[in-house]
Image (tube, rainbow, N blue to C red; front, side, top):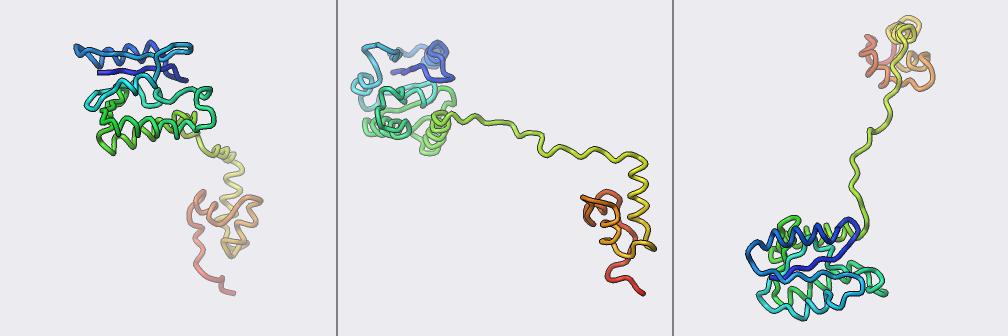
Length: 190
């Protein structure tokens, strides 16, 4: 069983090493840790892998080389090429963080999608509180507006009452705030 670890934003080498070692358990683990200036790296590991070998990584994004080594190649393209090489060699790739294997097309697609998300630097954010709620009406103002809304003598239509209530008031807002006005539907009788 082979393991590969590389420092990436949000992935510490020590944490990856501990997770990969724990996952391997009693199996012999040949762990390759790629660091700046090290002689052994992903290329040597890919050459050493044979059909039927198992490669464990903490997250697939660890397989992507740093930008300095990529040159003009996009990180996503590099990840696709590395995974294609592993598939062609019939190497089983396991993502330890999620337990996904790249043998299963569904798991592989999810793992690659997460790696792409990690590469883009996208952070999921919780939904914000939304639009701020309007301040509640003062009791005196509430009574004044309620009186206008329910007064069918001076304001024969809902639209006339909403217009008299002031700026920002619509018929639907008045109905939501004060309930039905009690006016009949259609045009008022003369």
